[in-house]
Length: 181
Image (spheres, rainbow, N blue to C red):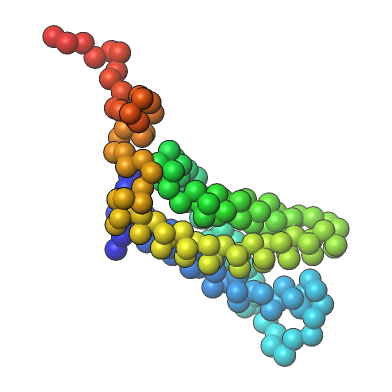
């Protein structure tokens, strides 16, 4: 399995599991959303207990994804931004994740039915757009990793994380507390 630099070995699989769980439970909940929020008559109806289980699973996976996104901000996103890699799809994913987070709060906590309906539509649309964008981000990232000539700034991770710019790029910082003895 692929490994994200700077993260535990199982982290990438954990990210994929969270995304897959969100996608599957979200798609399974779409008919219920269309029926409840848009008042469409559908031939298939998800029962109350099953719907609650899917909502709980989707909500749990959403909380996990929020935490995963925070963990990705620490290293993965920072390195990608400084190297100039995958910025369009990465920013797109961050915007969609923020929209899904805010709209999820709207679905649960907005008292006005019209606003709650708008939140449901925005949440579902953002989720459906995020899936192909993530696949594109993943494929593009793999290509960038395999073909070093496509990288704008092929810098070592330690130099980027240390954040010490030089005219030639980033160099590891030398601590001022280090003394030559």
